[in-house]
Image (cartoon, rainbow, N blue to C red):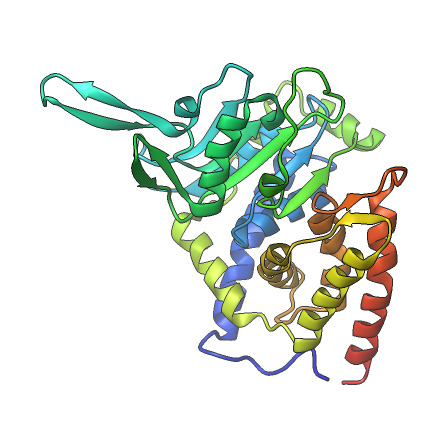
Length: 339
């Protein structure tokens, strides 16, 4: 069974090369600013180009804001001061209201009517900082934005841009004063990434940049346009092949997790659908026009870890996922070797 067939559809090698160049441009800018986090950068860019969202579980001062700002700064989105900003940060607090995120209707005396004032959610890159510290009402507003790319204010629906990407964070040590994210909202995040402290050498590299600000490290590097990023998204979906065996492997993996006696709630079908373009994006980043078992093995832990709920006493979700993933990858590898 072939993992690497001839190109299908209207996507050619030149378009794939351009799409990969777009991702390489974003990668170069991010790595110039963020030191020691190459895997986080790759996963974040995969989510961005595959139309997903990312949940970072991190410690304060680990570079999450810098990463989000760097991505926003890497986009050329039109005229300054336009309706859609490249980057916005929302600091979530217990007293935050949905209108503080989505926007509100304001009465204009000179026009004798209400006009909608967009909130900070109207941006291409949105950093939802400490998302688990806000109320369920605000979380519900975020869920609509992430799921439908729209917000509802005073019974009126307002569309978000096609390029809309959320990087949400939560502190793993916070317990008091938090509202754990409900399962439906967790399921809207493509990846959950646990950020650990970087290596000693990487920390020394960060300190060596002083007194230059981190974002200045990407000055002079190329940027990408909104159109280029959306084109890359279309190209990888249509031009990077997913063999039937890969789809079967994903379904078998999900069913293995659901049937595991240590798992109370398994992965949703939605997670498998969201994973397909992510696999294509990783294949493209690594110079392939087809998805391989390596892509499945690399992304599965980040896709499933926040979606499954384990029985009491099971503390290592990654071990559960790894045991279910092993037979799947082994079977896919055999099929690829028999090409």
